[in-house]
Each structure stands twice: as structure tokens, then as C-alpha cells.
Length: 301
Image (cartoon, rainbow, N blue to C red; front, side, top):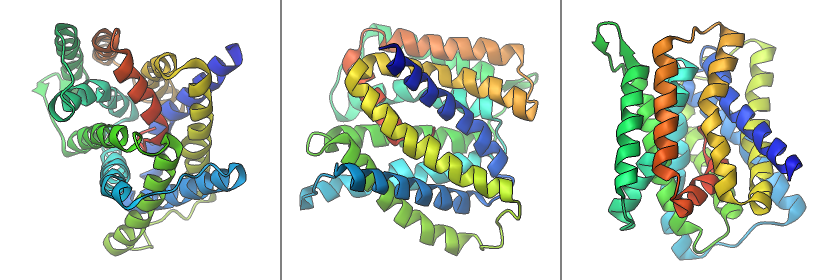
């Protein structure tokens, strides 16, 4: 069990660091090209794993009605908005905004899946939203930049993809849904990136290419496989608790690698956001399980 927890911690540290590495890479590559290259690397990694283990479920025609929207929202729009936002938003702020995903998922589940939204969820939402005001606030008030809007879009598209994934995994296993949506999303992203952004907008530095493909293979490919395996051993509910560490990992790695200052308001905001999410989902085991299962398929990590 200790080994499983260490592996889960490794995944969360990688995903938290991904915010910082993404912030570095968007200064070396145009955001859509960056997304396309990384998704291609991730797709190849997942396809290789599926080929070796032969863990690839078959799709019916009805599955495609959910798979296509999942690829559009969970991969194409999510990745594009995430890396575009990181051009102007620091990794810590992005990680804290994206930590609102569990609450957004709960709201969407209430609307589309008719799930209950308890008083505890309301209180947790209020606490977490208060934390957001601390995170995006400045001395002169609240300033919502276009970059922050893109990060909010990344969070929202991820939440939508969780709802779609929840319906799709009633029909096929989570790994197959993740693989198919990633490969399809990659196929959609590549032509869009080539049309919108010339191939000249890529880094001439070897380290940037190594970091790009390493992050795509390790953080989105390898970690998703490790996470899925450990979910079966410790349960999705326990595993999802580790996800609350992502903002703190992003904060520390950003400080160490980029020298990003950690302000007092950010610390207060991070405590409020994480505390609000924990309060809202503390006794919502089914929803926490869904978030844990979806974490391996998100481009946000």
C-alpha cells in the first residue's frame, strides 16, 4: 500500500510540475503547435501500452456520439486554452484556478445528471470561490485578464469532459475511453495547429524539444497508466485526495525553477480553494471517484 501511495504522489508531483514546464514551453512554441506535439507523443505512448497489454476495447457506433464531443472538449479545446492561457498566467495561479474543477463538475452533474447539490457543497463552493478572488486579485481590485479567462476555459472544458466520460465509461472501460479520446483529439489538433500557426514558430533549442516530448510521454502517458493501475489497488476516492496537492507542487516548482514569487494572498487563496474543495467533496465518495478516474485523461496535468 505504501508503494501505491508513493506512485500516486509521483504522479501528482509530475502533474503539478506540468504547469511550470508548460509555462516554460509556451515561450518556445506557439501554443497550438505545442499542444499538437505533446498530444502526438502522449497518443503514441498510450497506443504502445495498449498494444503491449492488449487492453483496448472495441467501440460501437453509439459510442462515437460521446467520444467525439469528449475529444473536442477534453482534448482539443482543453489543451488549446490551457497552453494559450499559460502564455500570460503564472503556473501557480493556473493550478489554483484548475483546482476548482471538482466543484464545477458537481454543478454540471446537478444540471445534466440530476445529482443532488447539498448545503455542504454550497458552503464549499463559497469558500473556494472566495479563494479565487484572493488568487486573481491585485492591489487595485480584481483584474481578469484574457489569460485567466483561457485558464477558466481549460478548467470548464475539463469539467464538461468528466460528465461526458462518466456516460461513456458506462459502455466502455476508462482506459479505452482515454486512449480513443486522446488519439482522436490529437488528430483534430494537428491540422488546426498547422493551419493556424506556421511551423516556424517552434523552438530551435534541443532542451525544449526534449522537455516537450518527455512531458508528453511521462506526465500524460506514463503517469496516466500508473494512475489507472493504482486506482484499482487503493480506490479512486483515496487516490483523488492526492490531487489537492497539485497547486502546492506547482507553487514550489515555480519558485525553484522560475523564481515565481509566492505572495501571502496566493497562500490564503490556495488554502481557501483546497479547503473549499475538500469541504464540498468530503462525503461525496461517488463524485470523488469520478474525479479520480478522470484525472489520468486530463491534459491539465
